[in-house]
Length: 239
Ligand code: TMP
Ligand code: ASP
Image (cartoon, rainbow, N blue to C red; front, side, top):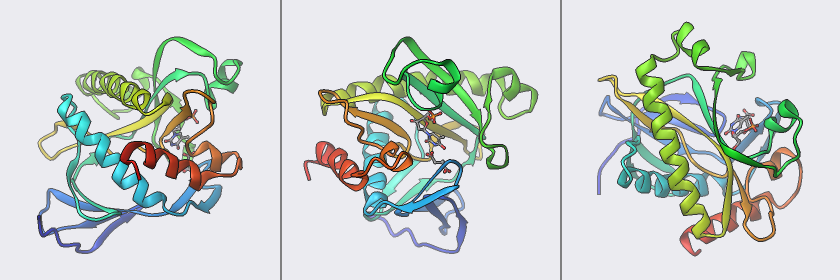
Protein backbone atom coordinates (compact mmCIF):
# COMPACT_ATOMS: atom_id res chain seq x y z
CA UNK A 1 0.00 0.00 0.00
CA UNK A 2 1.07 3.52 -0.61
CA UNK A 3 0.84 6.58 1.57
CA UNK A 4 -0.40 9.22 -0.84
CA UNK A 5 -1.41 12.23 1.22
CA UNK A 6 -4.11 14.60 0.02
CA UNK A 7 -2.82 18.17 0.11
CA UNK A 8 -4.59 21.30 -1.16
CA UNK A 9 -7.48 21.14 -3.62
CA UNK A 10 -6.28 22.17 -7.08
CA UNK A 11 -9.56 22.04 -8.97
CA UNK A 12 -13.22 21.16 -8.69
CA UNK A 13 -14.97 19.96 -11.84
CA UNK A 14 -18.56 18.88 -12.38
CA UNK A 15 -17.99 15.30 -11.28
CA UNK A 16 -14.59 15.25 -9.55
CA UNK A 17 -12.27 17.16 -7.26
CA UNK A 18 -8.53 17.09 -7.77
CA UNK A 19 -5.99 17.39 -4.94
CA UNK A 20 -2.23 17.87 -4.89
CA UNK A 21 0.08 15.32 -3.29
CA UNK A 22 3.67 15.60 -2.10
CA UNK A 23 4.73 14.32 -5.53
CA UNK A 24 4.41 17.10 -8.14
CA UNK A 25 3.78 14.46 -10.81
CA UNK A 26 0.83 12.83 -8.98
CA UNK A 27 -2.61 14.13 -8.00
CA UNK A 28 -5.56 12.52 -6.24
CA UNK A 29 -9.00 12.57 -7.88
CA UNK A 30 -12.07 12.31 -5.68
CA UNK A 31 -15.25 11.27 -7.50
CA UNK A 32 -18.50 13.01 -6.51
CA UNK A 33 -22.12 11.88 -6.88
CA UNK A 34 -22.95 15.20 -8.60
CA UNK A 35 -24.34 14.90 -12.10
CA UNK A 36 -24.81 17.59 -14.72
CA UNK A 37 -26.06 17.57 -18.28
CA UNK A 38 -26.36 20.05 -21.12
CA UNK A 39 -23.17 21.81 -20.08
CA UNK A 40 -24.23 22.20 -16.47
CA UNK A 41 -27.73 23.54 -17.18
CA UNK A 42 -29.28 20.42 -15.62
CA UNK A 43 -28.00 19.49 -12.17
CA UNK A 44 -28.66 16.55 -9.89
CA UNK A 45 -27.22 13.74 -7.82
CA UNK A 46 -26.85 10.09 -8.75
CA UNK A 47 -26.41 8.33 -5.42
CA UNK A 48 -23.38 6.02 -5.40
CA UNK A 49 -22.15 7.23 -8.81
CA UNK A 50 -18.78 8.44 -7.52
CA UNK A 51 -17.90 5.02 -6.16
CA UNK A 52 -19.04 3.22 -9.30
CA UNK A 53 -17.26 5.57 -11.70
CA UNK A 54 -14.04 5.45 -9.70
CA UNK A 55 -13.90 1.67 -9.44
CA UNK A 56 -15.12 0.99 -12.97
CA UNK A 57 -12.80 3.51 -14.56
CA UNK A 58 -9.80 2.06 -12.74
CA UNK A 59 -10.77 -1.50 -13.66
CA UNK A 60 -11.01 -0.55 -17.34
CA UNK A 61 -7.81 1.50 -17.31
CA UNK A 62 -5.92 -1.51 -15.90
CA UNK A 63 -7.14 -3.59 -18.84
CA UNK A 64 -6.20 -0.85 -21.28
CA UNK A 65 -2.67 -0.69 -19.86
CA UNK A 66 -2.33 -4.43 -20.49
CA UNK A 67 -3.50 -3.85 -24.06
CA UNK A 68 -0.84 -1.16 -24.63
CA UNK A 69 -2.75 2.06 -24.00
CA UNK A 70 -0.89 4.17 -21.40
CA UNK A 71 -3.21 5.69 -18.80
CA UNK A 72 -3.02 8.09 -15.87
CA UNK A 73 -3.79 5.37 -13.30
CA UNK A 74 -1.35 5.12 -10.40
CA UNK A 75 -3.32 3.53 -7.56
CA UNK A 76 -6.89 3.24 -6.29
CA UNK A 77 -6.84 4.63 -2.74
CA UNK A 78 -10.45 4.20 -1.62
CA UNK A 79 -13.95 3.77 -3.02
CA UNK A 80 -13.93 7.31 -4.36
CA UNK A 81 -10.26 8.30 -4.49
CA UNK A 82 -7.50 7.43 -6.93
CA UNK A 83 -3.93 8.62 -7.33
CA UNK A 84 -3.30 9.50 -10.97
CA UNK A 85 -0.46 10.97 -12.98
CA UNK A 86 -0.70 14.73 -13.25
CA UNK A 87 -1.30 15.83 -16.82
CA UNK A 88 -2.27 18.92 -18.69
CA UNK A 89 -5.46 17.93 -20.47
CA UNK A 90 -5.51 18.14 -24.26
CA UNK A 91 -8.64 20.27 -24.81
CA UNK A 92 -10.37 17.72 -27.03
CA UNK A 93 -13.32 15.46 -26.28
CA UNK A 94 -12.54 12.38 -28.33
CA UNK A 95 -15.70 10.51 -29.21
CA UNK A 96 -16.26 7.17 -30.89
CA UNK A 97 -19.69 6.23 -32.24
CA UNK A 98 -20.48 2.62 -33.10
CA UNK A 99 -24.27 3.06 -33.21
CA UNK A 100 -26.25 6.27 -33.86
CA UNK A 101 -27.36 8.02 -30.65
CA UNK A 102 -27.26 11.37 -28.87
CA UNK A 103 -26.19 14.51 -30.73
CA UNK A 104 -25.50 12.48 -33.88
CA UNK A 105 -29.25 11.92 -34.42
CA UNK A 106 -30.14 15.57 -34.88
CA UNK A 107 -26.99 16.37 -36.82
CA UNK A 108 -27.47 13.55 -39.31
CA UNK A 109 -31.24 12.97 -39.24
CA UNK A 110 -31.10 9.26 -38.46
CA UNK A 111 -33.00 7.13 -35.96
CA UNK A 112 -31.53 6.18 -32.58
CA UNK A 113 -30.01 2.72 -32.74
CA UNK A 114 -29.11 2.82 -36.44
CA UNK A 115 -25.99 0.71 -36.99
CA UNK A 116 -23.07 2.60 -38.47
CA UNK A 117 -21.14 0.93 -41.30
CA UNK A 118 -17.89 1.81 -39.58
CA UNK A 119 -16.96 3.41 -36.27
CA UNK A 120 -16.78 7.19 -36.32
CA UNK A 121 -14.08 9.06 -34.42
CA UNK A 122 -14.93 12.71 -33.85
CA UNK A 123 -13.52 15.63 -31.90
CA UNK A 124 -15.17 18.37 -29.88
CA UNK A 125 -13.25 21.37 -28.60
CA UNK A 126 -13.39 21.15 -24.79
CA UNK A 127 -14.68 24.63 -24.00
CA UNK A 128 -17.69 25.20 -21.75
CA UNK A 129 -18.26 28.81 -22.94
CA UNK A 130 -18.71 27.53 -26.50
CA UNK A 131 -20.66 24.38 -25.50
CA UNK A 132 -17.89 22.03 -26.69
CA UNK A 133 -18.25 22.63 -30.44
CA UNK A 134 -17.74 19.87 -33.00
CA UNK A 135 -14.39 20.35 -34.78
CA UNK A 136 -12.09 18.49 -37.16
CA UNK A 137 -8.34 17.86 -37.32
CA UNK A 138 -7.63 21.13 -39.13
CA UNK A 139 -9.40 23.17 -36.43
CA UNK A 140 -7.31 21.41 -33.77
CA UNK A 141 -4.08 22.04 -35.69
CA UNK A 142 -4.92 25.63 -36.68
CA UNK A 143 -5.78 26.58 -33.10
CA UNK A 144 -2.78 24.74 -31.65
CA UNK A 145 -4.93 22.42 -29.55
CA UNK A 146 -2.68 19.48 -30.50
CA UNK A 147 0.07 18.69 -33.00
CA UNK A 148 -0.35 16.30 -35.93
CA UNK A 149 1.79 13.71 -34.13
CA UNK A 150 -0.42 14.03 -31.04
CA UNK A 151 -3.61 13.68 -33.10
CA UNK A 152 -2.19 10.55 -34.73
CA UNK A 153 -1.34 9.01 -31.35
CA UNK A 154 -4.72 10.01 -29.91
CA UNK A 155 -6.58 8.40 -32.82
CA UNK A 156 -4.56 5.19 -32.63
CA UNK A 157 -5.14 4.88 -28.88
CA UNK A 158 -8.83 5.75 -29.22
CA UNK A 159 -9.50 3.02 -31.80
CA UNK A 160 -7.67 0.57 -29.54
CA UNK A 161 -9.81 1.70 -26.57
CA UNK A 162 -12.92 1.07 -28.68
CA UNK A 163 -11.75 -2.42 -29.59
CA UNK A 164 -10.96 -3.33 -25.98
CA UNK A 165 -14.14 -1.77 -24.56
CA UNK A 166 -16.47 -3.32 -27.14
CA UNK A 167 -15.10 -6.77 -26.35
CA UNK A 168 -15.20 -6.18 -22.60
CA UNK A 169 -18.77 -4.84 -22.51
CA UNK A 170 -19.99 -7.59 -24.81
CA UNK A 171 -18.64 -10.13 -22.30
CA UNK A 172 -21.00 -8.65 -19.68
CA UNK A 173 -24.01 -8.41 -21.99
CA UNK A 174 -23.65 -4.75 -22.92
CA UNK A 175 -23.47 -3.03 -26.32
CA UNK A 176 -21.08 -0.09 -26.46
CA UNK A 177 -23.02 2.52 -28.43
CA UNK A 178 -20.56 5.41 -28.09
CA UNK A 179 -18.14 6.98 -25.63
CA UNK A 180 -16.03 10.04 -24.91
CA UNK A 181 -12.46 10.01 -23.64
CA UNK A 182 -9.83 12.62 -22.88
CA UNK A 183 -6.06 12.59 -23.11
CA UNK A 184 -3.38 14.46 -21.21
CA UNK A 185 0.26 15.41 -21.63
CA UNK A 186 2.81 14.39 -19.02
CA UNK A 187 5.57 16.87 -18.16
CA UNK A 188 7.79 15.07 -20.70
CA UNK A 189 5.17 15.70 -23.40
CA UNK A 190 3.99 12.12 -23.83
CA UNK A 191 0.28 11.49 -24.34
CA UNK A 192 -1.68 9.25 -21.97
CA UNK A 193 -5.36 8.44 -21.44
CA UNK A 194 -6.79 10.55 -18.59
CA UNK A 195 -10.18 11.47 -17.07
CA UNK A 196 -12.63 8.56 -16.69
CA UNK A 197 -14.47 5.78 -18.50
CA UNK A 198 -17.84 5.21 -16.85
CA UNK A 199 -21.61 5.28 -17.45
CA UNK A 200 -21.22 9.10 -17.39
CA UNK A 201 -19.03 8.98 -20.48
CA UNK A 202 -20.28 5.93 -22.39
CA UNK A 203 -23.65 4.93 -23.82
CA UNK A 204 -24.26 1.35 -22.71
CA UNK A 205 -27.29 -0.68 -23.81
CA UNK A 206 -28.31 -4.10 -22.60
CA UNK A 207 -27.53 -6.54 -25.41
CA UNK A 208 -30.92 -8.28 -25.25
CA UNK A 209 -33.40 -5.53 -24.31
CA UNK A 210 -31.58 -2.36 -25.46
CA UNK A 211 -32.31 -0.93 -22.02
CA UNK A 212 -30.13 2.13 -21.39
CA UNK A 213 -27.59 1.55 -18.60
CA UNK A 214 -25.93 4.97 -18.60
CA UNK A 215 -26.26 8.68 -17.96
CA UNK A 216 -28.88 9.12 -20.69
CA UNK A 217 -31.35 7.98 -18.00
CA UNK A 218 -30.47 11.17 -16.07
CA UNK A 219 -30.14 13.42 -19.15
CA UNK A 220 -33.57 12.39 -20.43
CA UNK A 221 -35.38 11.86 -17.10
CA UNK A 222 -36.02 8.18 -17.85
CA UNK A 223 -35.91 7.17 -14.16
CA UNK A 224 -33.94 4.28 -12.69
CA UNK A 225 -30.59 6.03 -13.08
CA UNK A 226 -29.07 4.75 -9.83
CA UNK A 227 -30.27 1.23 -10.56
CA UNK A 228 -28.72 1.36 -14.04
CA UNK A 229 -25.30 2.37 -12.64
CA UNK A 230 -25.61 -0.38 -10.01
CA UNK A 231 -26.45 -2.91 -12.72
CA UNK A 232 -23.27 -2.06 -14.65
CA UNK A 233 -21.27 -2.33 -11.42
CA UNK A 234 -22.85 -5.71 -10.66
CA UNK A 235 -22.02 -7.06 -14.10
CA UNK A 236 -18.39 -5.96 -13.77
CA UNK A 237 -17.68 -6.85 -10.14
CA UNK A 238 -20.50 -9.27 -9.36
CA UNK A 239 -21.71 -7.07 -6.48
P1 TMP B 1 -23.24 13.12 -27.73
O1 TMP B 1 -24.00 12.13 -28.57
O2 TMP B 1 -24.12 13.89 -26.79
O3 TMP B 1 -22.36 13.99 -28.57
O4 TMP B 1 -22.28 12.26 -26.79
C1 TMP B 1 -21.34 11.34 -27.29
C2 TMP B 1 -20.71 10.56 -26.15
O5 TMP B 1 -19.97 11.41 -25.30
C3 TMP B 1 -21.71 9.86 -25.24
O6 TMP B 1 -21.19 8.58 -24.91
C4 TMP B 1 -21.79 10.72 -24.02
C5 TMP B 1 -20.44 11.34 -23.95
N1 TMP B 1 -20.44 12.69 -23.44
C6 TMP B 1 -19.66 13.03 -22.36
O7 TMP B 1 -18.97 12.17 -21.79
N2 TMP B 1 -19.64 14.31 -21.92
C7 TMP B 1 -20.37 15.29 -22.51
O8 TMP B 1 -20.32 16.43 -22.09
C8 TMP B 1 -21.17 14.95 -23.65
C9 TMP B 1 -22.00 15.99 -24.34
C10 TMP B 1 -21.17 13.64 -24.07
N1 ASP C 1 -20.57 17.14 -19.55
C1 ASP C 1 -22.00 17.47 -19.60
C2 ASP C 1 -22.26 18.62 -18.66
O1 ASP C 1 -21.43 19.29 -18.33
C3 ASP C 1 -22.80 16.33 -19.16
C4 ASP C 1 -23.14 15.28 -20.17
O2 ASP C 1 -24.07 15.44 -20.98
O3 ASP C 1 -22.54 14.24 -20.05
O4 ASP C 1 -23.31 18.97 -18.24
